[in-house]
Length: 541
Image 1 (cartoon, rainbow, N blue to C red):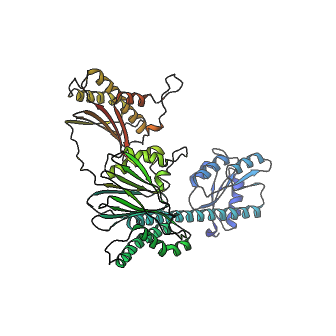
Image 2 (image 1 turned 135 degrees about the vertical axis):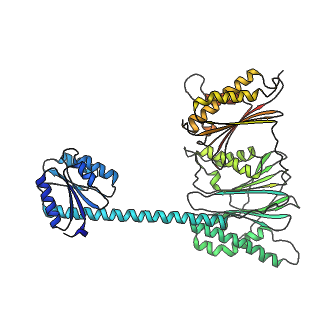
Image 3 (image 1 turned 30 degrees about the vertical axis):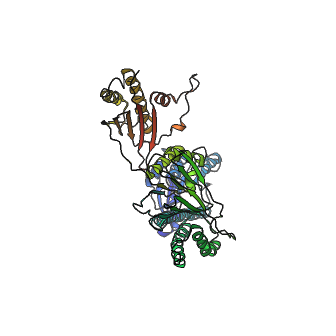
């Protein structure tokens, strides 16, 4: 017996057939383990088994049932089935259940040995393939991890701290793929800051490395052009910088058959203008504080890497105090919901405009929340990359509440009474002229609806989670805030209620929206949900 030829498991309730099989296989150099039925065969299974021979008809557990167990739990093993010469129906069923092959009794010894050899070879190849797949998956994970480090250290620049006259925020969330998004911040002088936002076509480490190379070329070109203009003391303009980078990189990019969409913007505080060169990138959103409107900024240049005979042209746009600029990658606008609809530029502009009263960091956070709510996922196909530059932002003053109270409760419907009592007790601290009994009762109803939704939907009925509720009173407003770590909630996906009784659902949110003066749902980057209920305090007539 040659134990290296393979270990075989046989199962047959007939002791004579079992003895014949064992003797034949051992004589051919196999190590054999024998079982009397399917259940005993399952107990004898191990990773060392390379082939299995099962009789179709056995007591306790038959061959088909044993076969199905093996195929479900040991993917690489495909048993050989033994069947009576007239039992073709069961043989067909066995093949459909994943048998490697079948052989009829009385069997031909040479045919059986050849079939066992073939089964072992198939098992060996399957295991080898699985190992290769595991190694490839591991290599892929390492590639993504390496690319992520490249993106964070080489592709994503750090904005200057305390650049007087501007507030800057940046955020990049790597996707499951490796992309070539990049951005950088280059301080020209105390009045000028350059912002570069780009996206290399394609995926993988090659795209990430190309983005890193482009970043370094921009710094190099600015340095070289700056030395060439020492006579007038003026820094090189964005169009000249982009043109020089194109000239320096065009040959390499043509060889790699890639290109880069890019926006190179210079914020000039002394002239109160932004001069930018757009090379096929996503249109930058400019929010105008005075008119409270948004403009979409776009140039006419081809992406970097395209053969271009005409010089790059730059566009000049003025800005005022309070204006801000929103640069972003296509990962934002091309996020999709479950029905395949894109978030799109129109929704993005609407989200940016709705967030205009906040800091750059909070603007990004609120836009991210809107996209997550729309798509129903926090995992994107492409990188989520954006930069916000706000001009001379006003000093933020956090308004302190006149009174505040908090409680934390388990996510259990039995707690609803305690929540209502907590809110009622706080309401009683507000003068009755501003908040009467009838309105307090309606507030209790709205609070019950919100808490119920969190318990049943955000936490899927789990009673071991926690929900925090805060009540705050300001001079002209009563604010109730629920905080939970459950599933993301998108109110836009909740259908409008049908009052004719034709369809259930949507009534809870409708009731809350009718009772409250304002309702705000949001989710931050730490996957925490916030539901804010606002009641404006006005003296009753």
